[in-house]
Image 1 (cartoon, rainbow, N blue to C red):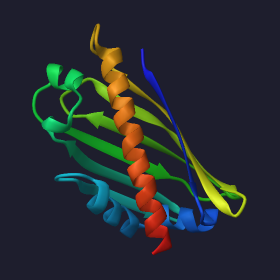
Image 2 (image 1 turned 180 degrees about the horizontal axis):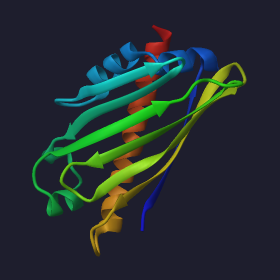
Image 3 (image 1 turned 60 degrees about the vertical axis):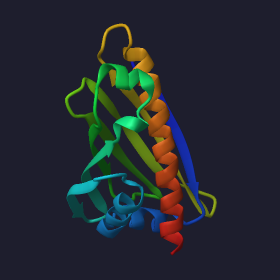
Image 4 (image 1 turned 45 degrees about the vertical axis):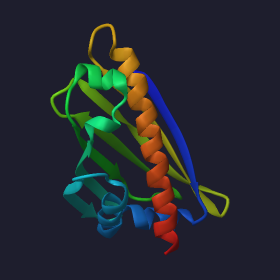
Amino acid sequence: MSRRIEHSSTYSFPVEQVHAGLTTEQYWRDRIAEVGGPGAKLDEVTTGPGTISVSMTQSIPADHLPSIVAKVRSGDLVITRTETWNALDGGRASGAFTARVTGAPAEISGSQTLTSEGSGTKVQVTGKAEVKIPLIGGKIEGAIGDEVLRLIDKEQEFTQRWLGA
């Protein structure tokens, strides 16, 4: 079983400006520095004409983990993430994301779309959290899903400020 993740963000900037920001290496360097958490780092950034692929490593300190997670895995969680954005085409761009917990059967994956909405931009994220641990996997998926949504909110707030700077 997996937990579905859905999130929608809106930006007060035109889709071309938001896409240009999301496909700039400096945006990712600034974002990981501000909201990446302790020891966060960009592992790889590959850009092309209007595209980007980013790999990063982040960790969640053990004392910040939900109790259900701490019961089955001790220590900090190290998470490797990837995120991609494709070229803007007709006011729309698509992308994908993954997050894997090192040393644990937990994965988050999904897709994201960037579309024009009035004079602003909407980013829609759809994915799933899957933890392959018998009996308690569903509870952990719920905890992970909640944490992912909080992280996306922080990243969205950062992006709004970064674009307006």
